[in-house]
Length: 58
Image (cartoon, rainbow, N blue to C red; front, side, top):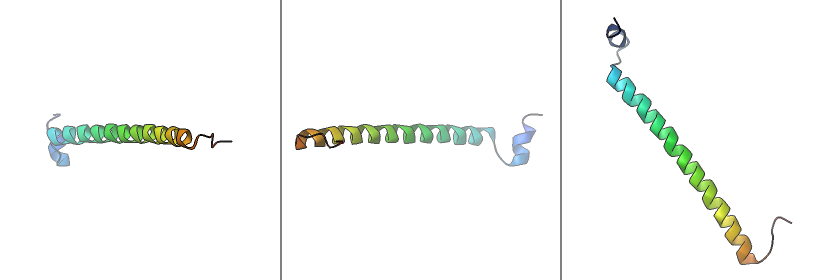
């Protein structure tokens, strides 16, 4: 029976589902934070170059 397997493992389906959902959400949030940090860094670099009035990359 499918309902017996989680009991034997000591994990209820609800808890396992919440764990997987939480894991997915945390990965999603980390990706958003990394993306936002990259965008902020790019904006900062562009703003810094404009402020200096020169192309730093040369």
